Every structure is written in structure tokens, then in C-alpha cells.
Length: 462
Image 1: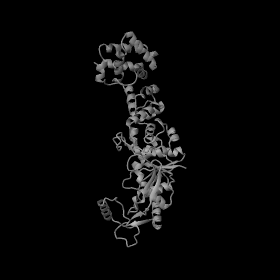
Image 2 (image 1 turned 60 degrees about the vertical axis):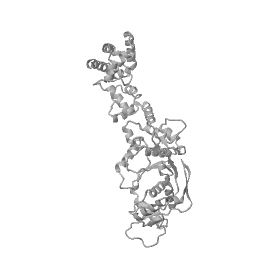
Image 3 (image 1 turned 180 degrees about the horizontal axis):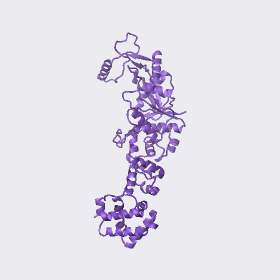
């Protein structure tokens, strides 16, 4: 059975790159009817934050990616890690190193002077003398000194790392706290993880983790290292480019469906298809089709996808989501018409809320440039006459097509261009020249409110 995992450190929010890694892991498990596990890597007690761990879980809930089983917290497994440290010591596969920080610094300086790669020189590997006083030893694992460390990466292909590239790295610090590469290997093995999907910034942690796997006799999982997400210029993605808290995207009015669709295409493809429902992603996803090269974050693409999902979302669900943006349309008797009229114009829920408020809020002021453009010559007379026509036909006006027909007949009777009534009417109803179709707006407002806004404009605009 396929078992994948997502294992963030709770030192901050869940960012876009982390969510993509989680999505790929989740899809792989779902596609193979396997399990997707969540592990919080909180061994660094000084940098950990409970709020950050909660933020990660909240982001998962928002995008609808559920995990299987209980969340595993590494901070609660220190006794377990100590059992394996003691086992390696007892089997002679690890040893205590009494090298002081000053000695280690001096060694690194010498190596740098000789233009060598900095690495531990193994001086305590076979030490059987009297330990120096006042030094709390670290525990180092015995890494192979000859040959290569080999594995097949699902994205990058065959990997051969010379054993000389991996020194006897620390698996437990002087205070007994286990280190990252040690606990990751143990947790992945004990949790039964078969498929590790993670960013390629972890690629050179993999040989160290393989050393731990081999020392403890654990079976290796399949490794898949995904290229990083760059900004639109091909450089490292920064917060300014979009590498922000996933929940910020919610606050900015993005839909989870759009965000996941956007992220799955950053590094994975299925022909030329751009729009993927979650069901299609699950059906089609295969880690073997993850791209080797980096992907570029494109905000315009995300906005395009978001607009697509807004347009195609059922109005009832859209109305629910809009409540978080201060817009309550669920009780409005023209809710369907209101949303149909505005969702073509909103690329985000924030923009959609603005479009809705533009219609529902009676203007208290009017855009100066729009007034100068719309209210020329006999504009007020035309507007006043149109208000009278609306009142005379109010029992027959219900749908946008009714209002549209009335406007057509009006301009034909008056022998004027459509703009002569369209521009001043729009400014009267909305306060500016933007917004949805006039026939839709009047159908939403109804005759009474439409006439009231026209009369208010006629009194106010000089």
C-alpha cells in the first residue's frame, strides 16, 4: 500500500511551496488508495510554535486535504529515538564524539585554508581512551568510508553519491536531543512511509538518511525530489512574489479549488490540460510525471483560474463564502440574479464582494470625471423622462430582458443614442461608470429603488 507523508516544521505559517509538496503527497496516496500522514517536525524546541502547528492544520482544513490517523509530533517521541541511539551505540554503529566546538571550528578553518570541503575528520570514530573532562559528547553515526551511496529518485533518476561526501554526522546533540536526518529516517520507516515526496532542497539530506536506514536495517522508501518554485523572473520565490501564508490567499479571496489547481500545474502536467477538478487530479496524478525543472509562479494564471472557479461555482456555495467578506446575499430575493450579474466581473471574492456592494449600496457621492462625461446638455431631462417611463411600467418590469426592452423602446422613441441614457443612468445607480449590465442592475434593484436613485442623482448632481 502506498503511504505518503507531509512533515513540516512548525516555525512559521504554511507557505505555497509547502502546500504544493503536501498536495503532491496527498494526490499520490489518494490515487493509489493509500494513506497520507501528517507529521509535525518539532524537535527544535527553541523555534517551535504551537500557533504555527495549528496554522498548518487550519490550512489543510481550508483546502480540503484530510490526513489519515493521528498527527505525529516528533517532540513526543524522544524516548523512542533514544532507544535507537542506544541500539546503534551498542552495535558499534555509532560512537560518542568529545570534540569541542573550538576544536571543530579550528578543523574547519584548516580545511578552508587548504580549500577542502569542511567535514568531520573521524578522530573519535575508534576512540577507546579516557574521555576529556567537561565535554558533553555528541553521538555520531559511522557512515561508510568507501564506495557510493546509491538510490533512484523518481524525479531526478539515478543518484550516486560518493561515500566520502558523507562524514560521520551527528545523530544526537550533547544534551541528548536527536538531529533532523536521524529522526526523519526513523519516523518514515516506523510510520510505514513508502513514497517520500519533498522539495529538492532535501536532496542531499537523502544520503545521510539512507545511512540511518541501512544502519537500522530499515527498507528504503521511494524518493521524489521536486524542483523549487521560482518567481516570474526565474529567481527564488519571495514573500513579495507569492510565497506567503496559504491562509493569506483565503483572505485575498482565492478559492481553495483554484489554488490547488494552480499548484498542481507548478511542476506536474497532463498533456495541455489546464483545468483540473480535485477528482481529476486524484485520477491522473503520478509522481513519475513531475517535471525535473523548476516552475515559475504566475499571478495572472492564478487569477485566471480563480475567475474560472468563481464563474462556475453554484451560487448557493458562493453566497456562503461571501459572508466572510462582509456580504450577506443569502436572504436577498434576487440572489441568483445578483450573483449571475457580478461573478463574471470578480477575479477574487474580494472583487466580487466589491461588485455586489456597488449595486446594493445607494451612492452617497458621484465620481467627478464620470459626472462630467455623462451629464451633458439634456442628460437630466432624459433621465427624468426615463424615470417616469419606469414608474408607468413598474408592474411589467421584473427580469433584465424587461428592462432592456424598455430602454430600447425609450431611445428609439427619443431618437437618441444609447449612451445618452446609459451613461447618466449608470452614474445615478452606481456613482461611477463601472459595474454590471444596466438591465441586470435595475432588475436587481427593482423599479422603486432605481427611480429613487435617479431622483437622488437629479437633486444632487449639479
